[in-house]
Image (cartoon, rainbow, N blue to C red):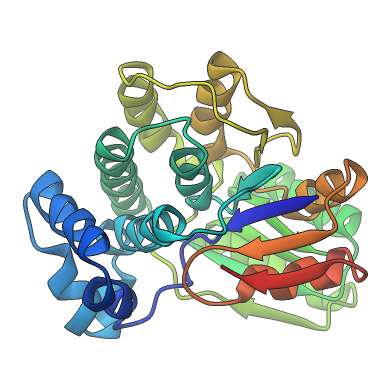
Length: 294
């Protein structure tokens, strides 16, 4: 069985999507439609913008979504038995699997990006990757820092065994990072992100996104989508909406999602979108799985 997986923020690069735009009239139409839906020329930033411009959350999220979805819609090999996406990628997966229209999905992703960027500006916050420590140790240390100091710090992305991203206030992440190093972490790497994604500090964004998602019409996707919040498959619209809302303040359980898809019969994981980050993670989670790009 084949699982098609969609990347999240961080996979972007300048020039992504240009080949698609140049090679296909239907892709070009879709890119131009995106410019119209957003009210600005996202393609100009995509094709010739600086890395700094592309790193802005309000640009990054619609850009990766657009590239991933057009790639899926243009492909003659898009026949997944199941789909999943990493954070933002969950929206791309849903549109590609027919659970949400492109016309509704792109504005929703843009609203999500703006809400997250605004939440980041409310409280100085950050994220850091922790390498070489067990999930349970990371969770315990983050909980201890929170209990002792009142600073927010949580496990936010379970990317693969031995790689977990923590998220929270500047002091919370710094304090937890020091303790994690002392506990034996191989490395604690600060990430160049706008703020504390997938943490309680995203609550203002979650509230805004909830209203937008509830007002949007979703359809039953053609195949199960394994969602970040619970690493479980769903084709139920009510459940899918609730999980998309919860996702902003909850951890991305990518390790558990890939494990669940493998347990349910996935032997091949195809990445649909810029880069090959997810293929690398899949190989670390499920070493016998076949990986490819769409």
